[in-house]
Length: 178
Image (cartoon, rainbow, N blue to C red; front, side, top):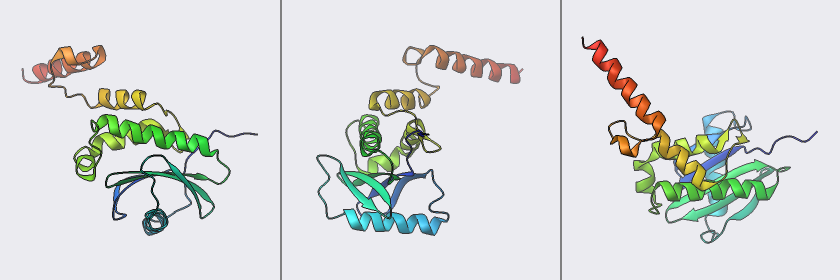
């Protein structure tokens, strides 16, 4: 019986191998120290490669690791050794492109940390419990942007559901102040 394609983790590390944003979907690394050790070893193995123009692939500890670099950020997606590399690569490219859209092309550590909430929402839109939900960067960025619209934004910049939620919030506040 075939199972759905899945990923074990998605990592976003800086140019020194430190965490920016990470999500684990597998129990292969049960403790935080095991996760950090995996991140350091993957970073060390891949830091001398030139994965800036297109994604690279590596086998590491019986896992497929696909990675790509942008300025001072390193993007990694890990799957089991029985997963399809093209699917994992599509997840990485979707994440990479969605982050680029959300950060308006300014993909660096400073901008990523300032918009960490958007990046974490992006991870949630791509994968849930290891199961791949979405890989289209435009769809991912659109969903993330709709979640993060400020309720104080003008109604013309909100969707119908966001406008209704804003109206409901204002109505609740006005009823509670009576």
